Image (cartoon, rainbow, N blue to C red; front, side, top):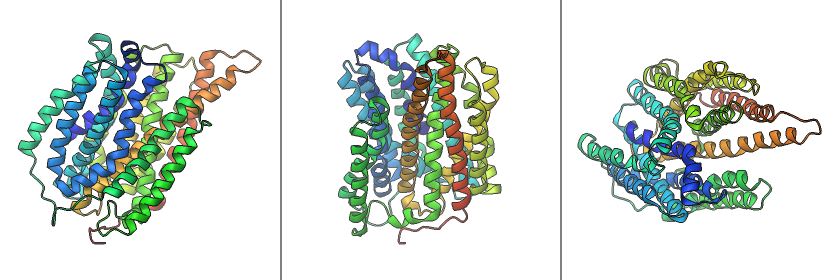
Length: 459
């Protein structure tokens, strides 16, 4: 389960470093090459809810193994792509397979381990895999692109996913869905998939083509309309795709907000710091990737050794509030370093960021699974991961745009401004806003996560 999570997160970040190489090799246009990233993110985020519900209805192990095998095949297709349209199509298919795999993995974990200390410890390791996967993707992408070939960043998934599928079939007990096998809510699935896909795609489009372009408000309005229709349809179904009573829970709503903030921080902070090192300190992509090794190691240590027992002792509310406030302090310090600042000044705060981000990710995962019936853990996992993906998409797109706009304004002043200082100021402004966002996420957790609401399939 942890291997699957590591691989899915790794694949969402490994492409970033190798993107210029891919653009040159397949002759992508400067705008078109972004489709390699947005195709995966849109398909993954859009289909998570359906993937999670299918896992609930058809069995977690069955969908987990199917997702692993599909991920292996689609990764091979990405690695063998010989034209831009082929690679983008393969990335869509890869995102779809990840949307089946990810909620199945998390649902298997939450149903395998008993709620409480045992599950908290397991989710701590699961969260460490998330943190380590994101940082490892940046490092491994640079290593493979520089020393082997860009195709290797995809093909490396094939043996890993295939081996994990074989092991899963041998060591994970089969799950039998309760009651009769039900037909998935096709209408609801189409509506929510289209709505979430548009919501994930809109910020990426706005970042690339400008936030005032007609595509952004059109996508947002269409997503809201589709969600409204989805709610109406679901209220009339006997066996809905998503139980709306779960979404109305104060606990679940608070967890969703905190998860989106966690996703925004994870997506934006590391990327902004990476760009800071490359564009103001002139690090190579590979050097910038290795600069975040301490961040990943801190996340690994917190996930494996600290987060689970700490949540068991103090509770989700205290840990999520504390890690959010700790992140706010660390990000605030990161925002203050000028263009001439060195890596050693960044290092302690990058370590704090790695630890606090992982702690928050584990806490939100524990929170979303608390009190949920065993046959609805797939749906809960999918909703959590959808909120996280939306956070990542919004965080990266919005805060890169804020940084670029502020840098552009400084460079346009009549009095000349050093380019490195202007870039650092742009990244610093975005990081300061993210620091405030992290503090607000902690406040949301403190005010909403008081007592876990027990939810059942018949509620």
